[in-house]
Amino acid sequence: KQEVTQIPAALSVPEGENLVLNCSFTDSAIYNLQWFRQDPGKGLTSLLLIQSSQREQTSGRLNASLDKSSGRSTLYIAASQPGDSATYLCAVKEDSNYQLIWGAGTKLIIKP
Amino acid sequence: EAGVTQSPTHLIKTRGQQATLRCSPISGHTSVYWYQQALGLGLQFLLWYDEGEERNRGNFPPRFSGRQFPNYSSELNVNALELEDSALYLCASSSGLAGAHGAQYFGPGTRLLVL
Image (cartoon, rainbow over the protein chains, first blue to last red):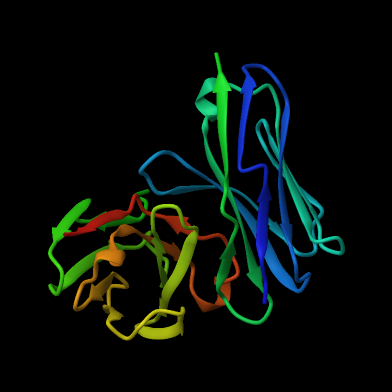
């Protein structure tokens, strides 16, 4: 059974720092991996999607990497800003079905 | 282009009642997914509809049901509400079976409170 783990559960850093959020999964038979952000009490915003054949995706200050063989993905945020404060979730889509399996999220706080 | 919309934003019901939640996907998307996010728990997959048919179902009791209309909008119905059904219900859409492995785009959610 696929399990997705995100570490750390919470992270607080000063504004301007570069940071890395981690996501690991137990079964490497995935179709893709998607990173989302969720603001308090709100829906999810898709940040990046990495297909299983890809190694990384970039959007602005965000870079996501994928190492399928080791079951790991990282989300790198450069030059963090207070507006980046949110909960970041990763989800993997398995080869066998169309269901997303979710991590519990990392709550990120960027201090001004 | 309008994103995924959900209504109502908030819903208060009492135990035993029925709740109906609605979702309109992004124009051109034929797949709709429903998720439950209970307080302190991660997102749990509920249902997936595509082209009017239920394609997959998560580990939820039958009192959670839904349907998809010809215009691809969707309803989630929860019968015989229980206190633990209180949660944020999120709807997402994607571009259908052929693109079902693509990105899912989420609505703002409906917060259901069962008293």
